[in-house]
Image (cartoon, rainbow, N blue to C red; front, side, top):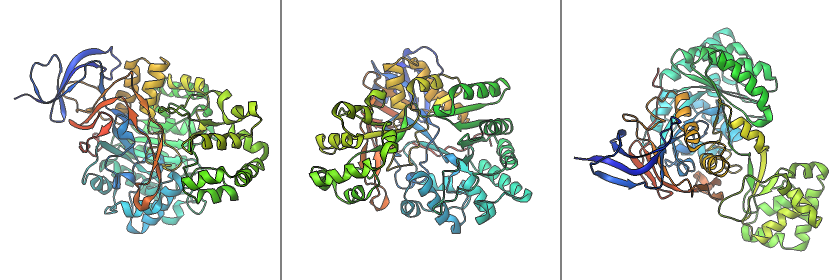
Length: 552
């Protein structure tokens, strides 16, 4: 009768780190049925000669918790080979949630992750109270790719403590209730628990979000409760007390199945490596995730993301044609320049981290310090804001600028990425939607760090975006290409693979803007046997599933 789908003659990179080999891959339903020379014909066939066939990629750090309510395609990650996305990071989730808590949770997500509150309130069905009920809601009608989730500390603590959750320590009885609720959420399908210890993440009223200052005993109780059901703990912290935070991460790993935390080069690669390697030598399952390029804001004349002065605020009220006309008017341009110059040396220092992303189809994320806006202006005696305006003028307002905020030193980032405990990710897909767009990190990793730089072999690059993150989540039936595994597969041209320049669209509820970023070089993406992308374009197939904790 033949197989449902056969991918013919590709270079198979199976995710284990083994050397690539040429083979056919046959699928029967949502499973891989045969790898090798397949003589049968398939109901569908994909010719992969000269192309790479790999497992689908796993994105460990997204905030698609809201967007999935109105965008089943989960763009932009689906343009970049991701077949499984983890929701619920950084402690901010929409469940558990009483009906009276919805405004609070939506407002918190808006201020922390730049997801518009009204889009959240009107774009989600809000027909749940428990975390399991939230997962049930995501399954109807179902996403294009797989999603799974962590239950957040903020919602869990607020569910138990109400308004006291924001600033007060939990009593022993409240700690017991918080831990029990977290454990119940893992039994209902959460893959673990996430917590946020980053004080600048604030509520609309300016207070840090619930759980930011929770005592260690509260987090240890939660880690123990979720660990009893095979759950992990994900932590975001500012490392202001480095040793104490690392000790807490070690305790979470000891009590839960694994600990996952976010890091950047600015924390210090060497000292992070010393601490984490000591934990791993002690048998603890500890992994960190970082974005594999300099992360930061993106902005230009056509975005809402520019300077904050009276003249620039007036400029933002205009459409692109009006903005172009304004910056070409000498008097207006003079005011725009003078107001930024009034910021003095502090403003110039900030713009040393600003870079023009170039005029090519492929955005440039890898310029050195000699190419920042300050350096570009020096030969002409220009202030960096004058460089910004000149390039915007010359490109008819199409120019984009990257304002690097972390992982600034690419040499140090290379050292971080080659430690055995770091996996690439931290793209924050679904969050900071009008400010940042790092969803293309898998494409950047493969095109830049593997193909252009040789930091990773192809086998190692694929392992780090598939097998390792799937293992962290306990998704034992995914992440590698092997007979019997789920059919989450990418077919791509490594020689053509690259990102495209970010764009702004207004497709969120109420027309709110967001950045998207496409890619080229993806011949096909298959999720649970369904071809969800062909030739860099989504097909309209929705093969994804809501993946629940397999160990509970």
